[in-house]
Image (cartoon, rainbow, N blue to C red):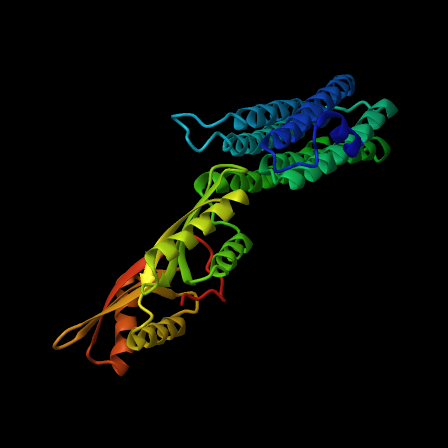
Length: 396
């Protein structure tokens, strides 16, 4: 069914890197969600009203909310395809992240409302009328929601959409919720034990737990989460593959929504090399990454390679910082000799939540250096890493 819907409603469906194709996938998911949830809502409201079951009625309201969530996702994909303008030069693709966040918040609201209704049902219990029609509607709802979960999960992974992955998780929650309602209905009828309210509380707790996780995941890209470590390593390896590149550091990746990734990086090259040749290599790096969909800006850092003392000192200090913490690295080292001492100037990159403060780290590095070189005075700039530091990545 999923493949058939994709072939029918998504033109050029194999070209998922095309933003218009990606938007078409999102719109298809939205319309499918609206249709299925309205259909399920109508059926559950009818059987809930007839049977007097608060859990079935709450499940119907849940489906109505899910239809609203599908509308929000649909609008999110529609707005995300808007081209860049003067006020938003990086485009509007983050609307998709915003729609995913709203869906996650709605899941929390549903959980709170179901919890409230379930407590009221326990405090003032009422009999639930049993019918096989109710069982049939609930069973059909479980099957439909399981299919919707698989449908949204497949499309979400295909186009890397956090909004659709949140929708898939919501469909999973709905199938579990409805299964619990069905179990309570059958137990109440055959065992004469009223479980409607208690089952509602268990379902509400599960939905709230899931909603909290969804909100956290949806907020992460909006707050500026760290890039994927594999992406960081791929960028580093590709940059290092170019002729004349001796090291790379200070990678920063900015996510303005799916298909809107911008980045900057510093590249170390020999200071003795002709600057026009180095500039030509940098142009090639930027152009090649742009063809792969990443707008990368490269900063040129010349380093002295003809002075063996500079190279030896760089290697030695790099080993020193690795002894303090293997995640540390240095770059842009230069030496300024004087009559009484030599200034050794360099930057040290630290990971997030590093245990030592700047002054402690500077003092520790300086202490190690002075053991071998009493006349060296370290001038250190401590920098924060904005991308995961691969363990095997070391600057030249």
